[in-house]
Amino acid sequence: MFKLTKLHKAVTEALNAVPNVDDLAKSLGALDVRPRVVSEHGGTHSATCIAYEPVQRLLAVGVDTGVKIIGGDGVEALLATAHHVEPARCVEFMPGVGRVMRVSVDNGIDVFDLHSQTCLASTRWPTDVTCACGMKDSPFVMVGQSTGDVAVAAVQHGADGEGILAPRSYSVARADAFGSGENEGVAVAPAPAVVAVKPQPRRESTRVLIAYADGSLTLWDLHLRRPRATYPPPRDASLNPNPNPNPNPN
Image (tube, rainbow, N blue to C red):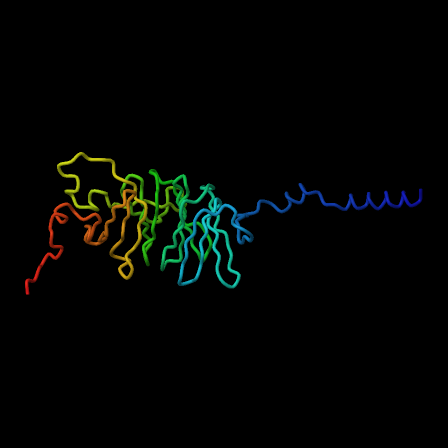
């Protein structure tokens, strides 16, 4: 009985010593707390795509909650998306500007800053996004669409103060990519979707290769706004038995 009384007294004193959480919260007042993920460890069970950055030797893994960055010396971080928690369609580094871009299966596009590990822009694209490409040493992004067009966009502040990926006036239509007379004299068929946009090596700021779902390709000059080469070649070029435009009989 004596032992039970002492135990009851100890428990009672301990309960009385516990502070009142509600009173404590009122005394502290409102706190400006912005919780965010600063690190993440473990497997990538929801990985659907990857991208590699050879200069910093970083691997970006597209997951349903954002982009997981893995590098040497134990580098591991999760760049979380707040608006597009869904499987990733593709991830792409933006060379020279320290950014990585993620496109979700429902056309959500997020742009993250690798240094601050924050989301710079988050946008739900109005059309179906099939691929994307960041331009080297540039804030611009090329967005391939199911309509056969390639749009150019850049990060800017939205009306609510948050960053958005806004389309610019520059775009590459399917007809322009293969010359204005591609469909001349024939019925116009729906344009095939863009499946890849890649900068030409050593000319990353001036030319991009655009690939379409029907297997056609065009090497597009960004400054001249015209194709440098196409596959299949134009009809008039395919009728020329001599591929050399300036034959030399000697």
